[in-house]
Length: 114
Length: 114
Image (cartoon, rainbow over all chains, first blue to last red; front, top):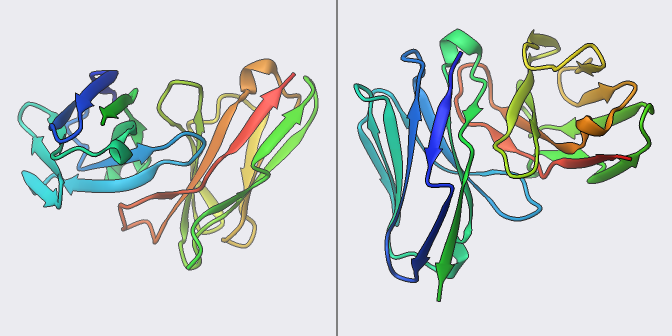
């Protein structure tokens, strides 16, 4: 089955710097890769996603890149702000093989210092 | 428009007791997923409903866990003979339909088995 590895487990940056979180996946059938932000005591919030027919997607300060050949995808946050501090999860799924169930990485705790 | 709601938000029960956790998906969403999140980990898939039927229950850890969605909307996750190892946050997510990728999560139910 699918396995998703996420690095780093913790990341501390200064306000205004960029943050990058990387994930690798194992199942070549995976075709959808969302990123979630989870604040303490809350459910995961979808912040951006990418499908396998696209190499890069950007939404304001957040961007995601996908390398299907290498089976890895990354989240880039620019001009970080203290409110970006949270745990970020990557995930992978294959809608056609597995009904869209998400396989999550282990999470990255991002801390943005003012 | 309301998001996914889950009740109760917290549940404390004694080992061996039976519990029910409820999920109310976004109105009109036909796909519903249950995940379990242990402390410091990413969510793990339990079961997926398309309409009233369980399309994939491969993530249920054993036969003490069961879920229903009798009218294709609200779902109940049922755990019999609870064990301390069942303590976790139980998350529910819904998606517009089987052909849609995006999953939107509720706030979760924190289950503690003493």
